[in-house]
Amino acid sequence: MHASHRTELANRRSDGIDITLWWSRDDDSISVEVLHLASESTFELAVDPGRALDAYYHPFAYAAWRSPELLEVAA
Image (cartoon, rainbow, N blue to C red):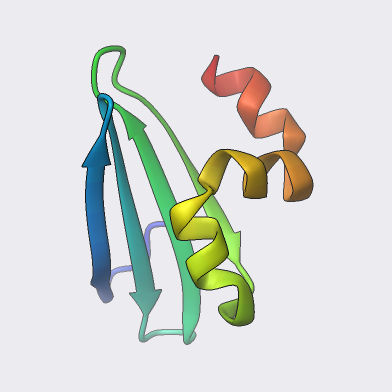
């Protein structure tokens, strides 16, 4: 999912977790990347543009709703 021409739309860090909202100009897609700083584990979610802020502010809930297998891998 790491497109070559991505623009960071927002970034926040809380409780050792870094969350970045990305927009890819190559295909006009939106994604959210979540990095657990202590373990350096990461996952990224493709996000429906209409749900971008939901996914950005609540990435674990969004992942559980869209891709629960990602949370098992990230644990």
